[in-house]
Length: 474
Image 1 (tube, rainbow, N blue to C red):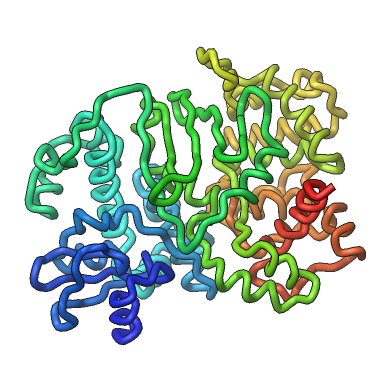
Image 2 (cartoon, rainbow, N blue to C red):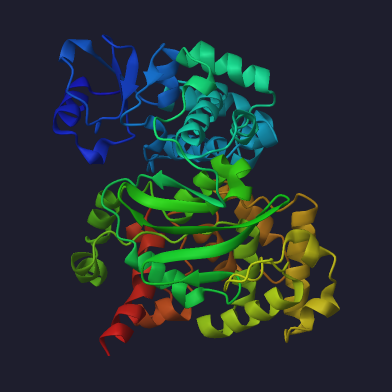
């Protein structure tokens, strides 16, 4: 339930902390806005409040052309039902219903489809199907306003299965066909396009880039003090993306051949760069611990670095077992050179990370040829075979199913499960307690930091970051 007084106050103050937590329906215009909308405030009597964009649209409101609801940050709830709803919402935004349907999504999340529908309706005021439909429409609006793609390309890129259905739905919901909804500024067709991603609250990109730079793979990734770029294979498309700070949050630039996958890619980037975290709540909780209080005070808002590809994260985690970050990077670069698809680029981005098929078809002997013990090669091969068979669901939010699938692979122990849960599955409470760097940072073994639940993953990132900060001071 939304508290009207709080919502009115957030609107009056244009409070960014509430951006994306609710939407305002404006009775006098029939549109719905974010609470930070720069347009002139409407009278309180004309405001109604909705827990999601889908709920506002189901009530007959159209999205605002000024504040652009499709750019709003998502949610990072704490309690179990809200966490389930948030995980499902993120998966739906990434196209889960188009890929496999509601039953498969519910199975991944470890619940029945009936329970998932009930939780989604209670949390967002809309069913999973309604949320998916609104997600497709808002993705289409983003593409219409920020790219030069044709209407036909946009229809399929946003998740519609036919151009006729796309045109009819846009006209029915928004009162105009897609061709009439283009942005005022003409965008020239080119090799790349850029979209803006709004974070929740203030965003400090530096700690994220420090973490990624230490692990960047030559040929696959580049990371500077201001941006991160990488090759990415998505389906049959082999392209690249770059992420840096822009005037309206993070700027995501992609090669145009990835445009057809913009909707799931935006969802993955939001998760990988932790754009939706409620960092005020996280930092306040971590600051209760004397061990972390000074870290939080010195550098607030250190977010959780995720992964753009769950399978890649799992492979890299296995290669990093019981060795240093630098050692893991060396081994992984050998794997890339041997099994990664080369690009046609003349830049530093020369290879894609090896995909599931490349490793599943390679065999243990060839994988071990990069300088691995046979047992480690067998684990990588088993991971690839499980993924190829559809038994390794590592999508963000599938925490229980992902953990269980990883635990079935011989050679994967608690450290690997916790690391992948933290970075790929998006579990904010994952904590690899046996990690030697964490033990050294705390100065003691066996510490599980139970008093910092449900944010132990953020504690781990801060403890790992201590080494980076101390190294920079020397």
